[in-house]
Amino acid sequence: GAVVSQHPSWVICKSGTSVKIECRSLDFQATTMFWYRQFPKQSLMLMATSNEGSKATYEQGVEKDKFLINHASLTLSTLTVTSAHPEDSSFYICSARDPLLAGATGELFFGEGSRLTVL
Amino acid sequence: AQRVTQPEKLLSVFKGAPVELKCNYSYSGSPELFWYVQYSRQRLQLLLRHISRESIKGFTADLNKGETSFHLKKPFAQEEDSAMYYCALSGRFGNEKLTFGTGTRLTIIP
Image: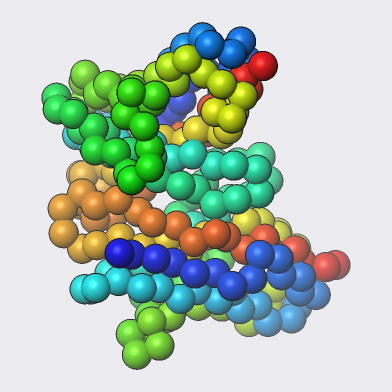
């Protein structure tokens, strides 16, 4: 199957600083990637849809200026948490579909996740 | 608005007993339904999708449009089935987002 990789796996930062998380599709090209957030023992909440070459589509209630998404190439999307605060501490997961494998509405492949802790 | 409901947060079943994880959905149209599984310390992965009509690791799920349900079933639970299970839904057109239920943690008792 297709592989999605995230970096870093975990990061600790001070309150007020910005943190960038990368999501790469290793063996396929993805025009669209999805960023999810997962709180402990809770479900995955979709934050935004990252679109290659254009602006991301944010879900209701997600601050665009807080969570900056850039999808500059067909294999890389980045999520930057700006001016991070302790309440931003969470598990961030990206995912993508391989259009050659499963079509536009098919299986989502997930990254391993990035755990952010803001002190 | 699309919504997925998994009423059970936790489910414990004895090894060899039948398993049923419930999932109900709300969607104005024809959805695609999926079950994803997350084993301990592993990433989320697809278990099965309704359009495939297949059995994976002994699990099956039938889409019931009348009851708007997509329950996951297995006749005989195995210890390796212990995991977190998420029901998910997306639309059929374009590269649409996937909406997840709250998940059910299944524990198989030896």
